Image (cartoon, rainbow, N blue to C red):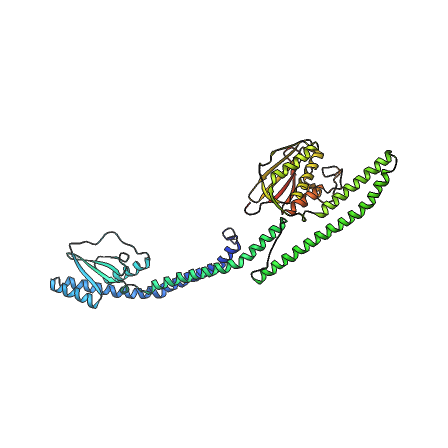
Length: 444
């Protein structure tokens, strides 16, 4: 059975971070491999030979000192070591080797020298590669004290290691900087395109100029063409329904005038009621067809707008509890569209319940307006059907007795024009809950 390892939870989510990872990670892996190969095949090999030569010289000088400890011999030995072997030698009478080891920042330095000294010396020794910048301190135990050697660092280690490190670090920084600048310029047009699409979904005006790579320019151009087609479709739909409404209102007006001249009776009252219902139907058709796109969004206090709709409903006799509504809800919305949306929802709730509650909540991505009632409710399988245009569910809630079944459809259209949605669910009051979801723009 194979083992499936998912890296999606560890990978960054943003396009910029992922693109940077795609470029930087291979470069970093390449630098690591090159560095390993350099140290393994070149630096360590050269340093090993240098360390072995230095260790052999130290061992030779130590043997000569032990063989003849007279002051003249020691002085001559010290002078020859300094001039011919580039070794500074000094005898510390009665001294002992340090017990604590001093480790270098790069362990390979100590490891290479340790092996060389162990192979050349048969006496106890101690060394320090980190205390001095230009020297390596080596101490060898001899009878009566300690011989201290200061060896030039380039005699022990290959000097190309530092240069190589600087080259690797400099190249990595340069490549990373170029990658960041390049990817940033490529991702920024995509961020602008995503922001324009999000704003257009909320119904805000969008000014977008195609920029970036050919693929991003093509996507931006396709978005602009799509936006133009959508706006053209909305205008055509609105003009068509407006024309139909205008053409039908003319004969209705004539009928109203003719009926007004007739003597009143029961049949005449019924005819007038039919004409009034037809006018209301035409108003609903036109409101639904017009949609919410002709109105420009405004920055306002949404809580104040909702309270205005609630007060209008209260004047019509509705009993509404608004205790769950936030004191202030700053937002950018189309006030007329949202007023119609909430008015439809409250009217629908008042038609089937005696208790109505309007509340608000907010999460990281959206703002919610809830309209609850204690009516008969609606079966969950009918939620989607209830919000379709011209749908009348006679045994349930969405039968719009005064209209043609466009109340919830118009409310959902208003919510969606803001980039949100209308969601139906069971109410805590026992009836139906209609929740208007409005996305929260960045910075709100």
